[in-house]
Length: 182
Image (cartoon, rainbow, N blue to C red; front, side):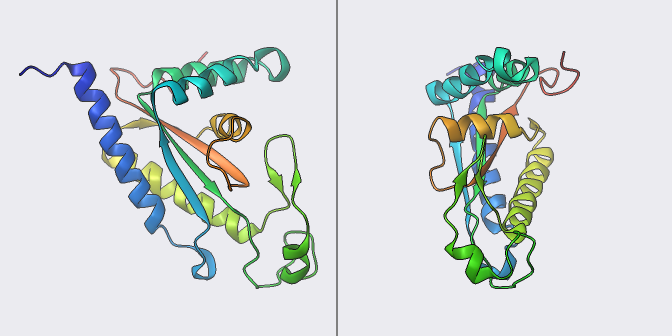
């Protein structure tokens, strides 16, 4: 049997993505409350996200199209999101006097995300993203954190239950498609 480099690279990217999910799951969480969600997107679903991004060029600018091209160039896309719930620390960073008040507020759809959000849950998302990017780097996977890909995923209904989503495209290429972009 001969395995083409294209198939081998796709298989490696998919295996790496699975290891990113492990890093995301085991990343530390505030107050021990795990509200991080993640998944791997490939094939037609990844293409839908790339196409949605490209279609935003007129409304949101050329950066969105550029990011769609980058998602297109990746073998897989990892989505990482958070369901923002109060952690009972009453810090007020959400804009409310206490966590009970924040917890009773109906979430509102913003342009890209639901809000308001608990600062500790957003920190959890950042820690999970850092852990995933570290794992991708150790595995020699080209990667970059894309706010835009997470936005596209939310608009298309991926990673249901997450208030904020970020995408991490993974690519094996001779040159990273995520840097030195136009």
